[in-house]
Structures are given as structure tokens and as C-alpha cells.
Length: 275
Image (cartoon, rainbow, N blue to C red):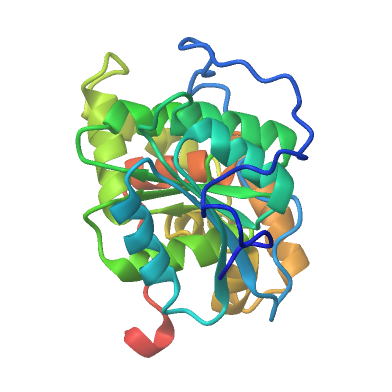
């Protein structure tokens, strides 16, 4: 879709957009152990067109992401940015439901941009695009409150699913990303993989059977509404279970809970029609 001011290039910030003080420091990214809230405060109402911002310094990548999202009539790309600083400015101006950010960008990288977006416009969910060589960035992005993680070489359907999930207030971890996170944690001084799996299973053991069911679906990237339909529960009940799961696991957001689910080997059961 053409941006409101058609005389400007697709990724030019508006000069009249108020700019809050914004500085970039290489060491400003919070640690994974203290993640920010990762999901939008108000999930996109059913039937609403999902407004998306794309940020990547490579025009061909932006064009590819736009083309994939255009296959879903319920998604509209409202702005594009060529770096993280510009992405923050455009999120402030356009208030999209979801911002799709590349990890490595000039001026301000995707992780720093994600942290600033979550601070300045908390209703905008963040989806990070990563490559197989950026495992450590995924952990840092978790700490900045990103709710979706996708591999650039993944299936196009995953991009649409990830954007929709994050817009719906859920976390979305590409299966490949989840596997890489678990493997990377085992190789970066965080303990042996077996030890982490044992620790995750111990955490999960403290949950009730229903909470374990809910956690397994969180690991699959489902929203509260989707979990409610799968488990035949009222959505408010699922929300209460999710809050309890986060508290019992000692994590602050759904994405971090999904990592625990994957570490514990908890895979959500397939929908009834697929069994």
C-alpha cells in the first residue's frame, strides 16, 4: 500500500514526526535473564486488517517480505524502513500492529530498535528476522521483548503465521529458531544441553496438568484464543492459566515460556483433525 505522503520514498521518515531523545549504545541491550513484556497490550480485534512495518537495509529483502505478506488479504504493509533508527521513527508515526525487523541494520540494529519500540509503542508487537549465524542475537532479542522469531530461509507461510500470531497477542518461535536457541544456550556457558533440559523439566514438573497443556501450546506459538479452542475452555480461563504458568516458571513473557517448553521437550499435540 502507498504511504500517506506519496511524494516521499517508501522508507523516508516524516519530518513532522516528534522525536523523543533516542541514543544508541552497543552495550544497551538488556540481558536475556530480564526480558521485557513481549506481546502487544491489546491483541488485534478479529476482522481488523493487520498493519505491518518492514525494516531491512536490503531493498530486495524488503520487497520479498512485502510480497509474502501481500498474499494474505488481512495484512497490509503500511511503511518500510532501511535501518533500525528509521524503523523506530516510523513505528511512532504509523503505530502498526506488528514491526518485522532484520537483526543486522546500520545506525541502529534490530535488537536495539526492538527495545526502543517496546518502550515507546508497547502496543506494537515485534517479529525478528534472523539467520542461522545469529543465534546469540536471538537470545538478546528475547531480552528486548521481541515476540516472534523467524529464519530468513524458512517457509513463506511461517512469516504470515508469525505476523498473525504476534498481532493476536501470542509469541511465535519458528521450530528452527527454537531448536537453535536451545542448542545455542548449551554452547554459550549457560550449562550443558542435558543440564538445561533437566532444569526445564524440573520447572515444568511444578505445573498442574492443565498448566502443562497450556505451556505446550505456548511452545507451539498459539494465542489465548487458539488455546481456548483447542482445550475447549473460556479464553479468560486460558489467560489466567498463562499468567500462572509465567509466574511458576519465573519468566516474564510468552516467548521465554516457549523456550522452556522446547527445552523440556514439550510439543503441542496436533489439532484433532490432523490426528
